[in-house]
Image (cartoon, rainbow, N blue to C red):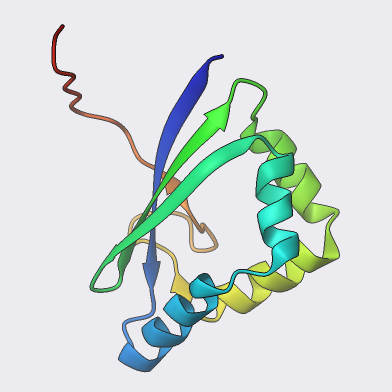
Length: 115
């Protein structure tokens, strides 16, 4: 079974209270959001933070598509409500489109231990 990995980046508003609130929401992600991730073929997801910069690591099934996930999200009122709520804590990374949320990162190095 083929799995792919994607890393994405996003910034939070640089406010300690907002960052704490954002982390609190991610300790109890709404069940509908988790279901939408699984339905899209996302098999695992982790989010890491340093200061106000986030990095998301996703492992996805071969059937996963960013375009299909976006279309499903647009049709899901609960996902739209979550995204509106999260945008109150998030901000676009400098240099990208003003309304850009998570931005795909380019892998520049990989290492795997040999046999």
